[in-house]
Image (tube, rainbow, N blue to C red; front, side, top):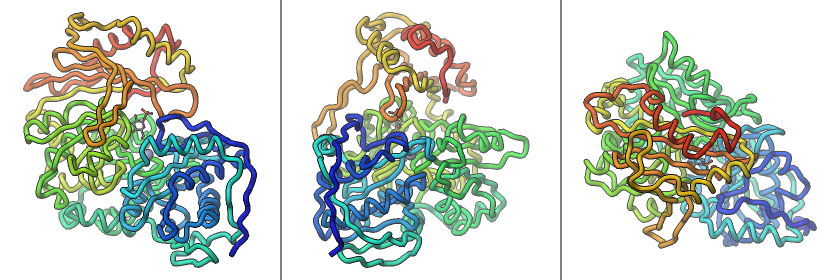
Length: 543
Ligand code: G1P
Ligand code: ZN
């Protein structure tokens, strides 16, 4: 029996309500007892059965390895007898979700997703339940409450686990199974997609670039794309996970994945480009000099789902987060499928997936996924695209423009104002609520307002309600303006404005989105008085 110590701690209670885990500056996590306090609260609330296996892994950012050792020692001290951890303490978020579903009763994921890492970056920790998905809000609120009361935590005095050595390591009270982080995930992907068709595509000279952004998907993409699918060496760039992501911002969008964007929009651009984020759950997809919006991507995957063996018998339904464009709604209507609109955040898809009501789901924020795991999945989306390209024998641009011709086009853009002083951001939202600046019947930018509200969601499975999920101005022609505050930023507030407008075609399908949406964007900024209230004349990021 290793010595179990009860270490006194001051209570910590600064988890943001409603968030699925704890995400903070790395410096905060390095405050003495801070990590331990949260882990103890988490283990207390999870109350895992002694025989249960706890899965542990993270995206490789600074502190990942040390935190993994601490969590294993605390698991041992708290009566957990078996943990399974990715080699080096690594697991992408979707791979962790899969491993939990295969062999765990729950899992701890170490990541701050797409936020920068390193000693001055961000760190995070979250708990996923036995279904592989983020723990529900009731759980995380319990954890926050518990963390605020704790006066001590339990930790075992045991040797460091050899995290780099695959195999079963037995300690006095706990067995630690170190697994290859990629193997099970790669097998799952092989079961869903037509690897033979994709292999033939690469063998025929199809050129792809995958930017792993020095984050977790490097080893996954290298194994799957280059080894199993025969893409040429060098297809994956920035493929070695680094503790600080090479100093970059591991978020696959047009701003942060600049190397990839430059190449795909350059003169000798490859046929296909893709990137994933820090922990591997987001994806960006590009064709030759062509950007696919995540909202369109979801719609296109839904429309072509049966081309992939894993979805050949059809899909049960689809869901999108409220700010995601309604492109997928049109596909669902045409295919006679149920279509759900949920608040922002992956956790809202979990119940629908568990109940078998949906098969595919996605968000405008570069997140797409399916019932194969309970997280969004970056590489999965990329493989799905490769499968569709291989079977259809068309370019990305042909697939997307063909889709618009059939379904019409939802022009879409998102403006982000990052690190705005919290009170300024709150005043923007308050003003929109109080003064009821947008009234049905009123006209903005030549469009008549049909309704304006603060989005509220009634979960059809558990009956719970989530209110205040974003202010919407809905126009009679299907256009929308949405305002919401981010729940994931770690400094100040991030204000997001989403603008969408639908064109049925056949004319006007090939405009530049910023140009097509110009009037509506201006109206959105005016109505909310963004420059006046935030002092910002331009957003930090436009997508
Ligand atoms: C952002 C995205 C949201 C996504 C979340 C986690 O949240 O907008 O769609 O689920 O990151 O990746 P936000 O910062 O907007 O609250
Ligand atoms: Zn992520």
